[in-house]
Image 1 (cartoon, rainbow over the protein chains, first blue to last red):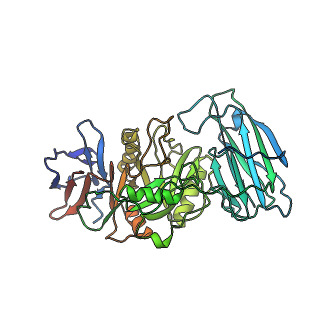
Image 2: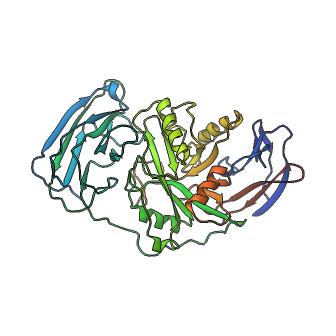
Image 3: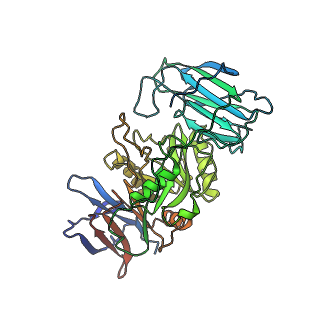
Amino acid sequence: MLIAAAGTAHAAAIPAADWEHQFPFPPRAAYLRAQLVDPAGAILALSNPLWRDRP
Amino acid sequence: MPAPTLPDPNVVLTGRFAPEQARRYAHLPFTLPDGVGQLHVRYDYSDRVGSDPALRDGNTLDIGLFARGIAPGSPGFRGWSGSNKAAFTIARDWATPPLPPRPPRPRPLARRARPLQGLGARLDYRVALWFDPGLPPEEPTLVRRGSPARPDLPPPAEPGWLRGDPHCHTLHSDGDSWPAEALHAAAEAGLDFLGITDHNSATFHHPDPARAGDLPVLLPGIEVTTYGGHWNCWGLERWFEFRDPTPAAAERAMREAAAAGGLVSINHPKPLGPPWEYGDARGYAAIEVWNGPWLALNSLALAFWEERLRRGERPVAVGGSDTHRLRGADPRALYTPRLGQPTVWVQTGGARTPAAILAALRAGRSFITASPAGPQLYLDRRAPPAGARGRRRRRR
């Protein structure tokens, strides 16, 4: 899941052990962060945000 | 080990704390005669229960020692063992951790009451002091020796990343193991760095340089433990004011730590964390959004962090196992944290120094996973145009 201040911006099932994908940065989002969640809803991993105004 | 039999103490301090004195410290001065080379302290109090915030129906009385001056930042602070140790000794050449060995001086003893029970509870205390009782040094018992066996874990999927656990405790507060054992256990968990963050500690561990290649990098730190919440400071070797449980005092101490170059993190802002009661007190750069197993109410800590992101603040997320016990589970606890659960991954470019690790944490070049095995999660920005790339590697 990619999450912005407004909520979930993108969500995808992970089909492979080593998986990579590109997503567009939502137009008005100040930040975007990622988290991996198991089917029961427990978080397995989470990232710090990317900020739109910070390269 | 049973406490040694001693003659009558030289000084006995007794008294009572009323419910309105809960969550406050009292300073109990006593006079230590000149030339005393060893001070032994034992204390007890009524209706004693453990310090776990889930416990009720009893009292917890914490204790610390000042040798000279009790003002915030005083160099006379000798250490604080909370309620973990009912007896301790300080002598010229040895001391009960977390106290440093040093000749005692005739200055005040600091202590404080925390009745956990509701209205009507009171606490009767007795502190006994022996001058030069001739106790032998307490020899450390190490259950982990030799070279650690590192597990076979997936390497970082991208170069320049390290994995570690920035939050744990040792015998220098309420942990059950020595700092050297914690580093050994961290290596056996597959970690590259470990933060030892003992509660209100005034002593800091320095690993044997000869074993630097064998053990994880040690992040110096302290968990400033107040009655309104806990916060970590990494990168400095000093204590910070913990006795005043007000938002203004907490903010003042956090700002002082940050100004001195420390990386400051609000710890476990969630029920039973214990929680963070200082509202919008500022001065921190990070929030521990993941403390121990995820299901231990960490979704509330995550919400605490996310609320601040939505407000435009930019604290970085960190995690920490808050491990206390390496020699066995606590039979009274709902769960026993393990080193690396969770694990914090940092991008240092391969540098294995405390400064590089703290710089990566401060900059948010990091992610948090359930264990040292992952799953790894890399998020970065790629052009064009303003895309975000996520990469995940499954744990084995």
